[in-house]
Amino acid sequence: MKLIHTADLHLGSKMDTRFDKATADERKRELRNTFRRMVAYAAESGVSAILLCGDIFDSDRPYKKDKDFFFSVVQDTPGIDFLYLRGNHDTEGAMPEELPSNLKLFSDTWTYYAYGDVTVAGVEIGDKNRASYEAALSLEKDKLNIAMLHGQVGDGPADIRLKRLRDKNIDYLALGHVHKYMEGRLDERGDYVYCGCPEGRGFDEPGERGFVLLTAEKGKVAHTFVPFAARTIHEERVDVSGCRNAYQAYTAVRRGISFRKDDIYRILLTGEVDFDVDGLAADVEKQLEGSCCFCSVKDKTERTIDIAKFRGDLSVRGEFVRTVLAQADMREDEKMTAIRCGLRALENKEIEL
Image (cartoon, rainbow, N blue to C red; front, side):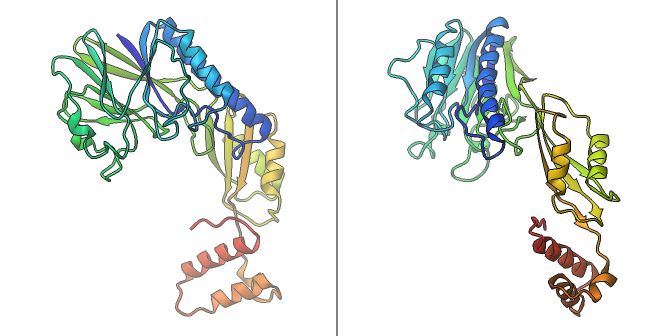
């Protein structure tokens, strides 16, 4: 038996704080289309069920077009069961009055779905059951057992505490909530896996994205991560030390990065430069237009500090540098760090400590 483990689509996510409007709108369409493509892949590959481990929508009141799209895809694929366990973003309010017959839901008590010798169990964690849901799980030892949960693994009272799920006859613990693929050993019998989100929605979600394909047979549940995103988001650091102007910085970026036309990039310019960097990021970003789908450049360079020049500089910057240098209780490296941070602040740049 084959299954797909996915989560955290966040249909309806605005994305306009990360990209310009045109790119944000395109990414919204691509997010919907990736789900459609994944379902088509499942149908072509003989998948029996898709495990939706929460946050399919970005809110309890999804946009009508996202809601209609999702439930239409489910209804139009009757040969596959969709096991939908709601997350912290879509706890209520998203369901239509009449559910497709192949959409299977969960609640705050464990619900079990049987597929031959495979059992899929899931529970939606909330205030009512948080302290007791682990103890209430009951799975047969001679079955292949998959459990579904949405939340953060940890040791806190609001976390999914793996130690309480050990020795529960779980072969595969399908998790949602963390947007990056992660896996680990639950106990001698089973693994726990975060499938991650199928598409990166911003620069805080770089790297490969996709879903997990499960194969339950011969007494075990095997799993494989399948990269499937329409575009990959990259974060790259480029050292532009020694560059004398924005064009040379651009050239350093082109030498350092092999751009993929369809992907999205955030580029961090680093290193020490001794030219006026006002507008550097915008200039490099403009020159990179057409290199990829979307590119954001951030200036993280440091100004090469000529201490001798500042000693006689009759400006706020000069006074600041002289004041720091006069501090007898600071080491030389501490003085230089303070000077760098102060000069960045005076230039209205972000400060990284």
